[in-house]
Image (cartoon, rainbow over all chains, first blue to last red):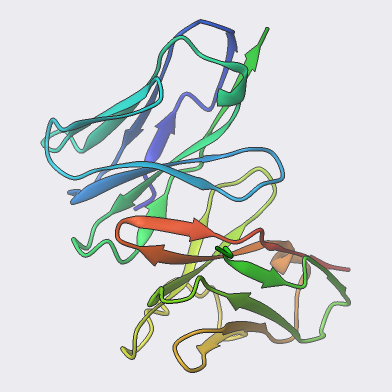
Length: 111
Length: 111
């Protein structure tokens, strides 16, 4: 049931772009994205509710393909502050009650 | 306003002892979740409370784990007869709308 995230880790130079993918073997009602900086609690980035929906947060956007049961997180012109581990959380129940999180993608942005 | 608080921040215990972890959610948040995060791993769902409804305990790994929520606010996660594999960071989150607000976690080390 755990969604699969790829890649496991990404190393970027400041200003470069990256894509993080999240795919599920189960039908999804929504996908939630969180970022966790080292030693800190996860912080909510965005939720995607409908097929093909896209959202944005700073220069971070995401898409959700309901049919493919996939979501992608796009980080554009990365900043040092983007470093951290990104988790997708999938809601299988439709009530946003219980999220199953992926194993995470570690992102490191260097100057 | 105050965020989610957890106590203790660190707990070291001996194998076989019982431990209690406390979570104070954000005032007014009716939904409360417990997760476990092992070193370098994702967030593993443990249990979910919503208002006065029966909790969703489907993520508890064994009957040594239990949780309660008193008065719809403070929650306590209890682990009986702790084992070394219980060592992890235990995170609590409360929810407003679609967003889960995480506490700083309790780092549990079982020797």
